[in-house]
Amino acid sequence: MRGVSLERTAVGVGLRPPFYGHVHEHAPAVGFFEVISENFLDPRSPASAHLARIADRYPIVLHGVTLNLLGPEPLDEAYLDQISRLADRVRAPYVTDHLCWTGAHGVTHHDLLPVPYTEEIADLAAERATYVQRRLGRPFGLENLSSYVELADSTMTEWEFYTRVVQAADVGFMLDVNNVYVSSVNHGFDPRTYIDRIEGSRVLQIHLAGHSREPSGLIVDTHDAPVCDEVWDLYRYTWQRLGPVPTLVEWDAKIPPMPQVLAELDRAREVRG
Image (cartoon, rainbow, N blue to C red; front, side, top):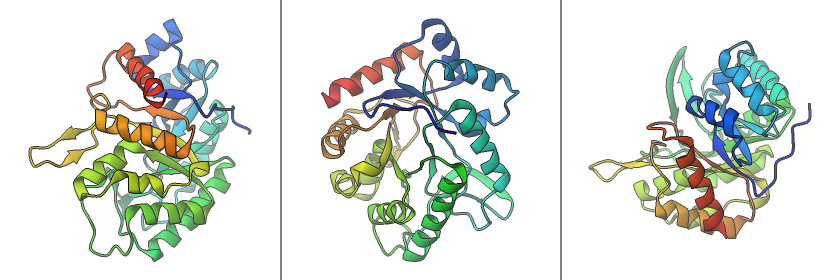
């Protein structure tokens, strides 16, 4: 089923339960909503009833967290069936998930876990991402992780690994600008070097979010605060470098009233001029 169209200049919000009432009552000027796919797989759930109403008025994109693309087991075909049906129900223009693993040997870790950046793993990731896109019948995008450790077995940089996988699989970038910034601080590289390696025509969407800083100086991608000035600066650079890309503001903890989140959308429009 063909998804609804989404303007490249659209600015959206991650749809969270505290926002349902505001959206139903006020119909805010939002370009699209992104939902965590796993929260809406059951079409009979109360959450899916809210989503159906909202999907009648707004474009909806799906963002998954449990695909487990790089886990040791084969991809979960039943899960892919559920994602495909959900994408059809909301007419999603694309589906995204993370370039990572989330479980192994029957244990789900409920976290987005990194891999060494090697040619072998890049080839596996590309093969599986190609399959997922074909299986879903619509564009599929991979998100870059925030990074807290560097793995000794890596033979390339994160941005070399990321671009190699996306290009080899012929899928899209789900480019999280906040994650690029978080990793750049934690590992001491210039985040613009990362952005310069991204192929603009392949970027499906950008994420913006807030983060927190530990006493040690480590930055953690917590999605519980406004976007900081440094990430806004990197977003401006990204927009100038890559051109118009649908942009989303995420907020997953310490969620404020929706008007505060909508103000972040206004800031995004202002920053990019």
